Image (cartoon, rainbow over all chains, first blue to last red):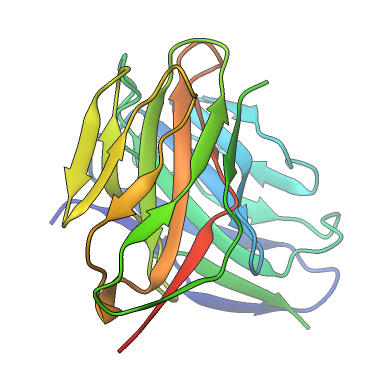
Length: 114
Length: 113
């Protein structure tokens, strides 16, 4: 079945460590996105990519990095520079068309900093 | 800039009650509008969408009409079920603003038997 796979589902990290969250899609979508969700809050855009080898900062990119070397993959690295990394991270993809298409989401990765 | 405003929750209803969750938006161009639903511990799923003024999106008994004159996209359901308990997000996509999706803060719905 087509979809978006995020891993790991749960991740624990010590302060000062970098961690990488995986996001893979087999929907052949051009655009991919990373969002952060904090308890009781909406989604905030971290990074997005409309095409391979290109990506743009979202609203809260500081302390995060991404790469887009393959169409199907868009990993997110949470660096030690991110001051409050404990959150629920959601990856999404979409077809880019005139109507905006539809965002397809993965099941999320919950990161906890100990 | 573009933005989406939703009514704050939580909203608590008894089964079979009528549901309305308000959503208003601000956009530069002519956005597409969406409602997404998130069940506990999961990602978001598209519930319905509308791409132009006066369009009505519908799915699973939920409806929302794109009202350009009031810049609104309110979500309604005539008779909610316990299984509708979730967080609902209103969102917009505006091609004039770098093809980004904008989300409201979400409204949690609790339906009691």
